[in-house]
Amino acid sequence: MPVIAVVGAQWGDEGKGRVVDYLAATGGELDRPVDVVIRFQGGDNAGHTVVNPLGEFKLHLVPSGIFSPTTHCVIGTGCVVNPDSLIVEMDALHAAGLALNNLFVSSRAHITFPHHCQIDGLEESARGAKAIGTTGRGIGPTYADKAARWGLRVGDLLNPDRLRQRLAAALPRTNRAVDILGGLPTELDALTDQCLDWGRRLQPYITDSLPLVRDALERDRTILLEGQLGVMRDLDWGAYPYVTSSNPIASYGPVGAGLPLQAVTQVIGVVKAYVTAVGAGPLPTELNDQMGDDLRRVGNEYGATTGRPRRCGWLDAVALDYARWLNGFTSIVVTKLDVLDGMPEIRICTGYRLPSGQIVTRMPDPATLGSVEPEYESWPGWLCATNQARRWEDLPGEAQQYLGRIEELTGAPIGWVSVGPAREAMVAVKR
Ligand code: IMP
Image (cartoon, rainbow, N blue to C red; front, side):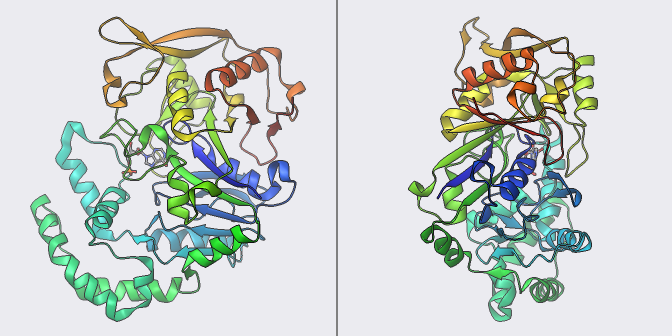
């Protein structure tokens, strides 16, 4: 049975949430719901928008397969969990009628505390004009504590003695750092009480996720690994330092989920039909003109977590080639094709002109992208609505041509094309 990683091929916000919701509920080619969905990295910096028969949801921590009642959804070991955000999100899902008895939180996932969010904000202020433009959700400071081995894990919420001992060891160091940055210290007793409250509330969901994942693989169940963000914000491969603090690329999927490497059978890259990014850092194809504003307005390109306007631009095939190489896509899903319906001309960046004048089609170190100029090719728009299309034949010829070119440039076949936010607005590409 397949183990499918679903990952972002650009700067994040490609539509992974809607793809995972669709695949989890329908099974895609399998024609039955996926058995297990595991979020493998990131935290509540994610904003996965899902529109389905139950309504519209913005998921931050809960895996996007949660609406399929028979699908086990795991917040994996590679994730960082802000218990307050998780509880707010769970309350909203309960209010929408979900029982959430298919939700599991790995006891090994690290906890994002209020002081991590405070440090994130203070560090961003300290960076001044060089701010990364983080989501302010404490992601970097949580992963930093994890790597420095001062972090606390979700399972610690259920063990009062260990919890107090770990907090007592970690807090003086944290408070010293906060003091230097000009913030407020955290009180040990107050935070311990808060943790015990979180533990009482989350106890039914906290589990050692490994037996569940292992059992699923051994019983040949279908497993979907849900990534957050995209390769261009990867800690190692993105435009450092304008990156997140974890690895959104597919090879981190088995690490964050608890699977052997060779278990992964498919890697689906999610590609928005154009490019968007929130936060700072280079974005070669950014459109700072009316066209960019039109993409933002028609595509409703505002951050699902922070509400910030997203930067918009033309599709970048150099970035896609880089994403394909680093992820090993077996197929791609192109999302938000319908947003281009009103564009008379559509451009694709096929190369970068370096300051030396040389044109390259392979990604240099993304940290240098601030000094490249995009080289474009132009495609005719289709100037008609695609949102009712459900089969490849329903798409206008120009849209088929544009998609064919994306396939060619990405080197991976298109499995589906999304033409609207609702679950059913998907074209299954069978050619
Ligand atoms: P952090 O992950 O909050 O530390 O932010 C690091 C960078 O990743 C910033 O540029 C953020 O805007 C960006 N980022 C983080 N999460 C998301 C997301 O879910 N979608 C898009 N960009 C994100």
